[in-house]
Length: 165
Image (cartoon, rainbow, N blue to C red; front, side, top):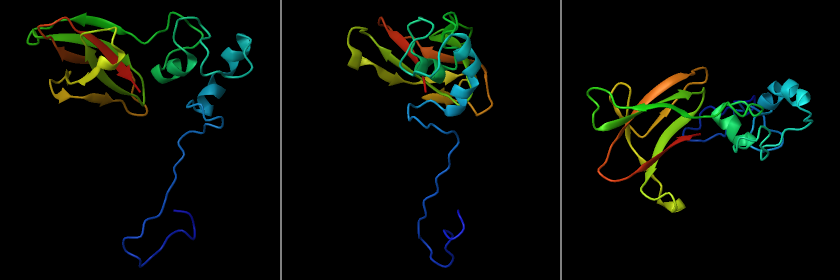
């Protein structure tokens, strides 16, 4: 609390505290520190300003989504993807998804039986690598590595989508 904002002897009084972890001067949802880190690659590729809506590498994923996924916006081969899908002993009724989780992200799973209906996606639960039921997993600010989740197979044709935020 800034000097002068601290109040002693007034129980229940609420004070607003704003904590800025990263600056975003242009309010595009991308931290200025990230854009600064890309400065050399931007210069090398003839870009003078960061464009969140652009797809610099032509991989079909815009620069903002590359930022969220933690992938390189100048490398079309660097994509967020599920690296493995198989079944394991003890999880015969589950699909196993293994993916690279980046720091400071949250992951969840949605499912649908109809890819043509955009509003048909619904959040679904899964088991984490320890077999605990989850609806999402979060990574810490310095935590990166492969994660495994198990999604229940169902008796109908179904599609899954791994969300990253």
